[in-house]
Length: 366
Ligand code: BGC
Image (tube, rainbow, N blue to C red; front, side):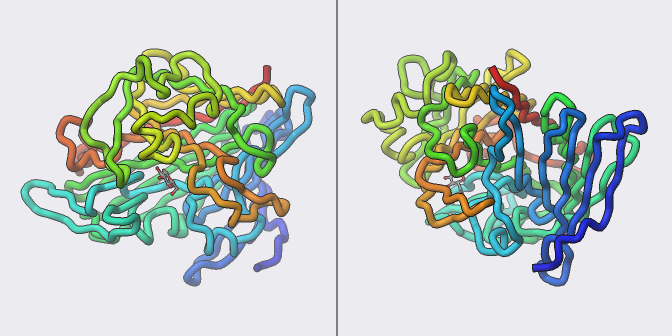
């Protein structure tokens, strides 16, 4: 690992001296340098990002007594990111979640993607955007600390057509919001589904499971899956099912029910069809610490994944072990396998119209 010397400090927002971004060396990947960016807001809270996978590494936020703890999964050193394949905090592309049998057709041309999840493609394939070193730029003269990551994806990398330019700007506001602004362009018709794959535990990452967290998702339907977790194409109303989170329920309350989709998913590992009717799309509350996470997005769906495949094999920041169901993800997205499901909202990206989208993770206490 490279030395951790601070190599740059940038203040932003001239009248807000306390907000800043520091940059440290973090590692080397394929000859490219990986840096760790620490963003401190005016409230004195810090998040950390790296340009490998444009990932969120750490989010230190207070509980109701003001005690700060990291609430997201990450690794202390670059070695963890190189070995780990669970997408901790990373930006996932070119197609987040699954594409059935790694096949898609655009204008009668069939494209084949690598199969890295049983018979299917998951999260952009073996060397998706999560495993790339992105270019990085600390933004100046912004209201809050902000970093832009850019990835230039060559035509046909991992089988996806188009020279694609993907950009995500992370902004860390004084209200403890991580704003993720995405912009993606292409030079020829392709498909796109982009998300952030952060895992959260509002007790603090590595502090027990997340089954006692109270969750609300403003979604009246979800997309049931087959045994390989590919949507069947059905939009099933949540009414009367363990997938009804329109009012708060703990994650653990119904997760063990003998319900077909919980059995197939080994828990929750499903796309919810967001109502998109109010500002906030999902709220998670930890009664123990009082921490609250709100998720706000303009995307049509969100994947609730309850860490069903976590097995304690990953050791993260501070030596904390990430056990079974010790983290949840709320991956804002288009629906899985949309390229093969004409009834789902289109995921086609054309040279004429850039993809512009924003998702916010907002932290507070109650
Ligand atoms: C998927 C899970 C997968 C996890 C980690 C989630 O987005 O839906 O099935 O295990 O990512 O790869």
